[in-house]
Amino acid sequence: MISGNRGEWSELYAFLKVLGDGKILSADANLNILPGSPFIPVVSAIRKEKNREQLSYLTGPTITITNNNDTTLLEIDSSEVTEKADALYSKIIGAEFNSSGAFELPDIEAFMDKLLLSSLKAPSTSKTDITLQIHDRHTGADSVCGWSIKSEIGSSPTILNASAATNIVYQVTGLEADEINQINSIKSQAKVRQRIQAIMAAGGHFVFLKGRDTFIRNLKLIDSLFPQILSEALMIRYGEGLTTIQDIVNMLEERDPLSLGSGMYEFKFKKFLSSIALGMVPGTNWNGRDDANGGYIVVRKDGKVVAFHIYNRDSFEDYLFNHTKFDTPSTSRHHFGELYQVDDMVLFDLNFQIRFI
Image 1 (cartoon, rainbow, N blue to C red):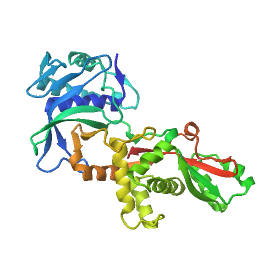
Image 2 (image 1 turned 120 degrees about the horizontal axis):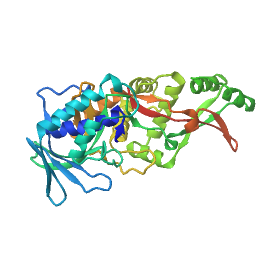
Image 3 (image 1 turned 90 degrees about the vertical axis):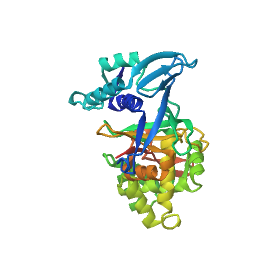
Image 4 (image 1 turned 90 degrees about the horizontal axis):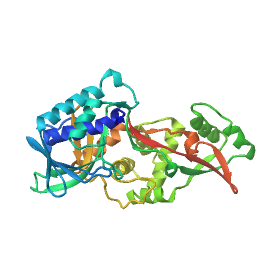
């Protein structure tokens, strides 16, 4: 039996909903459907599952499933797909599944078999969750694009997960040797913040030193100063206790620690957020291109499936900026938040992940 959490079942819901409707509605920065109901026409969905041939799902009143040889494998009325999508949505939001755990839906799995689907989502490469052939009404051309999918149903999704690659290393100066153990002995739920405050109270200073080579390289591809900007943002996150990207960037704008001038931190942070949402992975060398080169699909809580086409990048960046926060990963798993010595240097690491509010 196939099992998944609410977010994973939501990805299948998005696939069925887009297939049945043959279009995706465009959204503004607050996920409201744009006036005039502009939409992105979907010609087909393309799916390549593990150990199976690639299939194309052609939209229309009758949905046609074909293989690479253009052999028709199945024809099914689009209203049946839409009906099953609506049934799946009702089950996802049902009270019996109102948790973050995995669950099975046998009737939906039977319909998946009918559609030649063996998993909730096709194996993703980097940021692409679904591949669609869309029609550009401006140029009249069709193009095949990768899209990332996020769902408001269930636990708030992340756009950047913590890992060893996201550790940021600071050198700490101004501490006496006996103060290191004393500060590390602070144990509480808020120990990282309290240790930072204790270091500062003891006359210590934090200076950004380094990060993992690949991640720093990727950050510099966004902006040559972004490693330093991120290090300043993390000190505000942990030292001041602020969490939302907007609040932290507002404080950066106010303090201007790198003497960049008004508006610079917000602009650069929006580029960072869109990069990690669409293409950049901290532990992999990035070429600056979007992997999800079509855009971003969001399953709203009310079941509407909306999208930010890559053409609407400004609205997409505003959406990310206004609706994301720094989240604290496990300090023991990722080994940060404690003073340690390397040769004659005293060091302190911070780690992070970014998730939707």
